Image 1 (cartoon, rainbow, N blue to C red):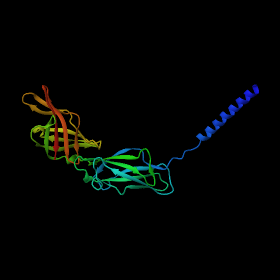
Image 2: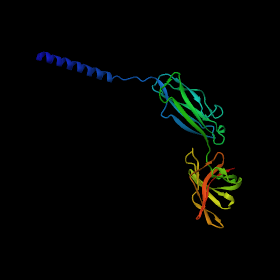
Image 3: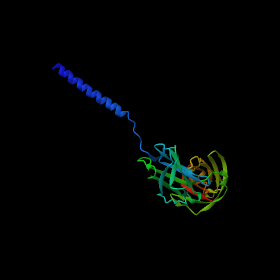
Image 4: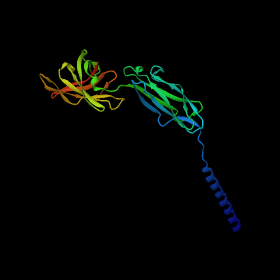
Length: 273
């Protein structure tokens, strides 16, 4: 009986060892990835279109394997915002070629500066389609957010501008005019002076910040404004951030005017050339 039990144990041990060895051999096998195309790294990007014929945005497309021959990747483009090829952007074609021995290539998107009047913004959605390389199940779309960009020269703000004041979202009085003159600038910040705000012949310093190309902003540090005949010295200070556009030569400021006795309210003024 002992022999038979020992024999059974040996058989079980042999079977287990065989399974372990087989399992190890199986786990050591290397899976060959399928040959597919994806957009590399990111699923979206922002393109600030400059008034420059060399302005271009490059979208990287990658393959999972190398090949000894060129491979063509096909893509489609749609726009939920209504951008039109030839008006807001240009493409050489709807295919991109990954050269032999390489695993990436780029889709070159050329923005058309004149296609972005005012504050127009657009979105392009690139979708990979079947071709020499089929699209993968991941990273197969890329969204490109587009808007125009103009370099900032603080000296451009030097003229008589039209201004409209708003209180609680409604026009406050008629439009009138102010004089805007350049202040100083350093790097991506600077200032302008606005004389004539509220028909007061005292300059108000407005700070400009264009560090973020997607968000040019204005702010007003607390400073003396006019002297009220009853309440004395008034002050003005910014409330939150306003905006400005170097493309449209426009400044928007949000501010409060107040005296020791109280506030005249929070106003927004839109200043346009």
